[in-house]
Image (tube, rainbow, N blue to C red):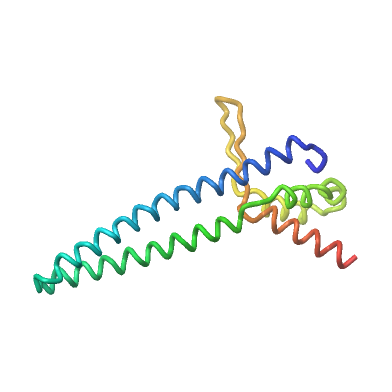
Length: 152
């Protein structure tokens, strides 16, 4: 893994693709929620002169819910953006992978696999394997490798 540029590129592309798809989905939802907030604001202006306290209260409550959801989406988008893995991070994590791997115990190897891989799906009909990487697995591994190198 550490010496195969094609595998490095595929790993990076897969990790980035997963995060970018999630960011796009959340951004689309955030756009819809913002439109709903605009609609509710227009409703509020329209109801303001009617003195319908029930309708005004319901609109204010719904606006608060939508604003809260927009904030949640913003935070999720920021988190996913921070989880995007750079090519340098992948190279750094993989460059010492093979020498490191050879010296690890089974317990340590298991921990690294669990750190990097979220899910493996085998399709027996097609004969394919799909690997889903953990969002921050490579970043965490790269950081641990840096810390280990600094302490030696």
